[in-house]
Amino acid sequence: MIFIENDFKTIQFAFYFTEMDHKDTRVYRFLLPKLMTSHTHAYPDKQCMSEKLEELYGIYFKTRVERVGNLSVISIVLTIPDPKVIQDRALLNESLDLLSSVLSKRASFNQEIFDSEKRMLIEQWLTLKDKKRLYAQHKFFEYFFDKDPYGEPLSGYLKDVKKLEMNSLLAYQSQLLDQERIDIVVHGHLSLEDQVLITSKLSHYERFKEVNFDATFRAPRPLKTFLELTDMKQAIIKLGYHMPVFRHDPLYDAAVIADIIIGGYPESRLFKIVREQEGLCYDIASNYEYYKGVLMISSGVDILQKDSALEKIKAILEDLKTFGIHEDELKNAKSFYAHQVKTSLDQQSIITKRAFIRSLLNYQETIEEKLLMIDSVEIKDVNLVLSMLHLDTIYVLHGGQS
Image (cartoon, rainbow, N blue to C red):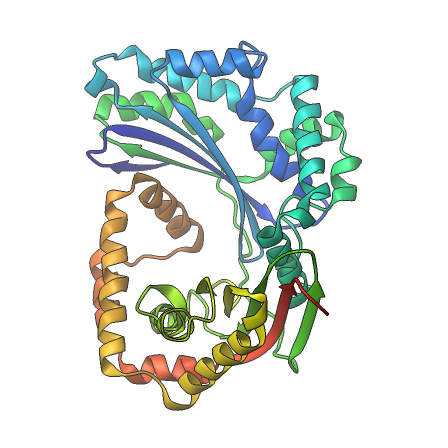
């Protein structure tokens, strides 16, 4: 169990369940944390559970499912006010008891809640094409991450949702609690007495298990372009580049800085040129996915400007590949990156998650070491990363004529 001592006015109890990402279990992992935190044996429906959470000073659960390379991670996080601040010592005990009931094996879930969650997920699939941004993201991932798990939805496909039964979900919950790696992070202003109590209540859930982490992606391929016509008055442009630098690589910080300069903040090349100078788009941004070694660019544009915007984006990236960046761009991007790291220290959830990832993947650098690593990045490092860019996939969802 990881304890983080901090002066936040809330305490977080974070449980991370880690297993290999597999297509047959995605629908279980997507829905299970929602069911687990929506009700318990003592609070058998959502209203009862909500009233209990409100009674305990508005404590709340947050759940998430995400990929970390080839791994699937479920997080269940309970946040409570610091009992010392509100002067209610009993809150810690009551919160821990509620958390334990959420994490306990169930003989059954509330059938109505199960049916509702399943129905809502089916509805999300059936209406996906009406949500243009989400649909474009789904299709782009499908094309770019072709035959890779990253191209498949975290929730499983519609057919997986439709055939889901409660008994199979209950069986998977037992597997989750009995077999998976379980990391626990507790973060807040904690006395030694608090830590002893928390350990006595929660330590039996923890399970260390080696996981075979892998961060790889297929080799680059000749450019593939996909155009899709739909009923809307604009266009959404997505570009996928190979940028084969991963989280554990020496050039990682240079790759983060390259992403910032390309499209990661308001002073980036794409934002300043495509949006501000040329007026070719409504919005534009890049995103570096360091578990896959890729850079993705997304932009919403006017239908009449889609071809011009696409060509300008490609030209800017080619210019960066060929000629590199300027010293002032490096200086500003490093300053922005360092500021992000420093401000993250004010965000409890980020610190909690960071502690888990460091434990899972054995990253040891301190914040001070990270800032020194950022400061040491040189222009040649960023230019080397930029020279690796390879345009792999273009996807455009657009209205108008085909």
